[in-house]
Each structure stands twice: as C-alpha cells, then as structure tokens.
Length: 307
Image 1 (cartoon, rainbow, N blue to C red):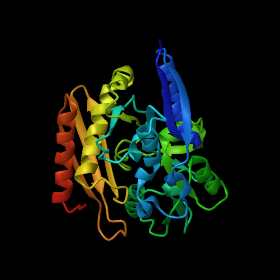
Image 2 (image 1 turned 30 degrees about the vertical axis):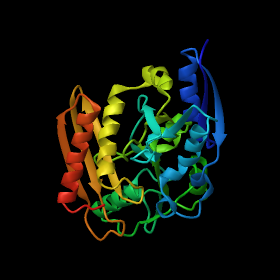
Image 3 (image 1 turned 90 degrees about the horizontal axis):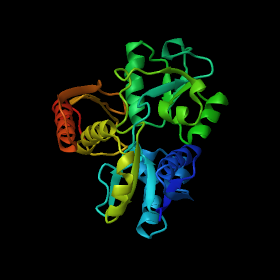
Image 4 (image 1 turned 30 degrees about the horizontal axis):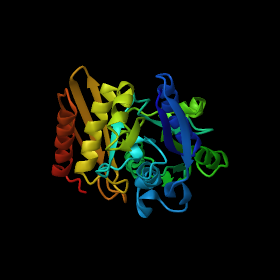
C-alpha cells in the first residue's frame, strides 16, 4: 500500500508552491499526499523586523508543532528560514536540488542601482541585503540613496513597490521565478557583489527525528551538491551565532569535490567596512563541508566580525 503523507506548510503563495512541489515529487513516487496549511507568527507580525521579534524561526515553530502532535508528517520550509540548530526531536531529513541562490533587483522604472534618481529609497527586510547594498552604493558614491524596511510576503512587497513607496526592492530570484514572476526581475546580482544568504534558493524538508521510515521515502529527493553547499553555508552562520539579527552572507559552490565558500559580515549602522572571507577545500561529505564553513567563520572573526 502506498504511503499517505501530510505536509505542513505556511499559506503564503510561495510557501504553498514549495509544498506542492514536494507533493508532486512524492506523488510521482507513488505516495498519497495532502497539505496542511498554517499561518505562523512570522506571517502575522508585519509591523516590526523579524530580527526584533524572534527571527525567521517564527516561520517554523507552528509547523514543528504540527509535526510533534502528529497532524503532519513533513514540513516544507525555505531553508534560509530554518534555525541553524534544529531541536533534537526534529531533523531536516532532505534538501532537494536548489533553485537560483542569487538576489534580484526589481524596479518598474530603474534598471539598476546606477540608474536610481537622487534621494531614491530601496526596500529590503534583510540585514544582510542592507549591509551589502550599502557597500555597493558606497562604491558607486551614492550616499544619497537610502534603504528602508520592507516586510510582508512576496506579493505584498511587490504591491508596495508598485504603489511607489520604493524606487526598487531586492528579493530572492528563486521566489520570483517559482511564482512565474521572473519578468519582474530587472537584473540578477552577481554573487560576488551580493553574496546570498545561507541556504537561499533551497528547500528543507523537516520530520520528527524518530520517523526513520520517512528518511527512506525522502532519500531519492535529496541533492548531493545542494546538501553539501548548504551544509557549509549553514556552518558559517552557526559558528557566527546563527541569527537573522546578524548581517551575514554565506554562499558555497561545488565543482566536483572542490568547494569554495564566500562570506561577508557588516555592521548594520554602517560604522565599519564589510568584513570578507573565503575558503576552499576538497569536500566529499557533510562533515568536511561543515569544517570548511567553520574555517571561513573563523577568518571572519579574525578580521573583526563578531556574533
């Protein structure tokens, strides 16, 4: 008899797309799958930055409750929303192939930062994007451009842009592409200019640790390259304190067994220059990927970054 699986998911349009994507992958392997839509605290609190109200873990906790009490078998998350240290009773059992990890510039009028008018306002909810944007603007000698908070789901952020509140906003390219909104992207930032967040573009499928039956079911969905690169990225973040209240970027690439990790850290108030670090090593398993991430975090700290 085929497995019957319930997937817990947030109810935003992007979260539902992600859960339905995993649903279709499992159904193609013969499972019967239904979705359990939920509203999380992270979805409800829109008047304050996530860094001030508990971090991106607010998007995860209610879904974990559904796993704990048996209402759901799996929870599908954006991996960058998953806390670096998952509680022992849970396990991120599968990380499928990653979509585009890069950040995208979205603006109805301006092709890029260089084209912004005097006094323009850029919207972003991310401390990482804030410090990286500030460094790019400083390089362009555009101290007149300001960066303002932008909260809400993807559609809400786009609506605020279209209402004229911002000259442009920065979003994850993967989310826009997944929802068929790729035409809204004016340009995709080079990762050397805007280093992505740890896990950006990847999904994490979470289960109760005791559900070893689900590990076997999910194994064919896992992607080796994504699993290893995100392990390195998350190791950087974990070693630096692992919080969304920290302006940290970490991105890894893998070519065969050769992995490179680039990371950046900045002061939110702009009082210091970006701290950059990179490292490379032969990586064949998660332990080696995590060791490389920890090495890069050590370089960040040695150069002045702090938790």
